[in-house]
Image (spheres, rainbow over the protein chains, first blue to last red):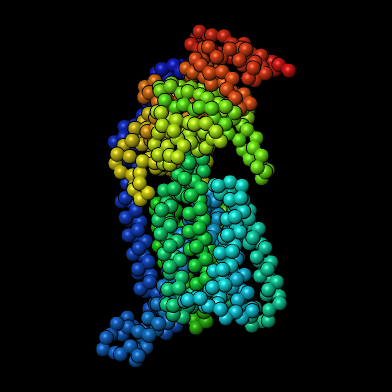
Length: 366
Length: 265
């Protein structure tokens, strides 16, 4: 009562609880985390080391044991150095593929989650992967032989499918207004996912067994790229996507607080949403064209990273890209070695890890 | 300082090109250092006017100018260096800390790849001290009470170092105690720091206690504007809300109080 009596509207000196808790800027040092610059360096350094170590160790492990000394022994000609051939020709492309696909999917996951203001969104929520899968499926079933530059038929068709899906969703979400409606984006994406899945089932139904097996194997996700060529083909798209990502983090922080809040703090909401959608779709399309739709990376990695570095996108985005790279390389290592000489599709490993994690996340949020 | 001249704004409805106007020929002036209240019934265009004043929306007709310079054609970042907005409620999708939320106010002052430095952190600290939220710096925003959250959002807006603070029903979702806290904070910021404010509210007594000037709206038009004691009368309340009210000066409170009596058919 005394507080109410004393706290008349507009009266001065009545805000005791506030006045008592006033804190000088200097006192904040004890409660404020270290400045963002230091945290960013630590985060990038820590996760960077993890990626380098993972990418160096992973090619050494596999069904045929190899010696690192022999791999780099210059006295043995490369054509006779089996260890070097296994390391550089058989395993390194696969490790690099894992690293770029993992980085792309994890970063795209972070961007989609902020864009949709939904922590459970994934790079595949908006139908990009379903479009890619349909494209790949059609190329496999109809035995397409087209190619363009470094792209063979299946990756090309999957890119095309992803592009069409992204264009449809984008058009629907921007029909009413210049700014994107995230609700329409989400609904259109989910609907398109179902629609493309139905088409995929239909195509499977009319295909023969060998084609269905090949298509099903593609949908499980596979990093066995065979050479560096497919990675080089996908690299320009990934470079463009990551260059666009670099502009986004502080705007994503504000966008995830709300479109109005972001606009009021100086974010060009429409432009940021378009940049986020296009860059994340491009990264997803490139990753899927390279390795098929490997699930759960885009949700598991960002959430694990947030547990470690907090929720600031200036840390979460680079950390997720790096950890995504290391995580998928490790998952692929498990896929190659757990039942060696049999290989488990890497998408199965990520799903086995990701499914329960996703449920845990739902329960935890609940 | 903040001036809107002959503003009209309409929304396209149902995919058709036809526009239904929510604001029509609105001209308002906000003086430097004033605390201006924006009153009117639901759907009268208060939030639309705030969005036009903050440059979030572009008028179909008319001009909004700040310190004599039109907002039209200026980037969001440029406008946000001068105008800050406090919405009714803020629901971040991720669990930001209070310090992170407050530091987001520095966004318009930082370059695309620039990270906040000691000066920005000091400014955030100062804004938190002014709003009594310094002790919450390390807390997760989501775990705060309604009043604490609103004080944090006000701190974040202050960190923008704005010339004008626009507040959209900042006490609407708060209980009486928190309403008093936030109202008292706004008064203090206005008096001690000279922050110019425009406050949209449904609470006539809050407006009467806080605001030195009022803008009264109905059906997208300004019905009256001027000093609070001049425009907050029984007859204007009747014109705006179709409500008969008793308007008297309450000596212990030190301001006009409004007691609604009945709706006028």
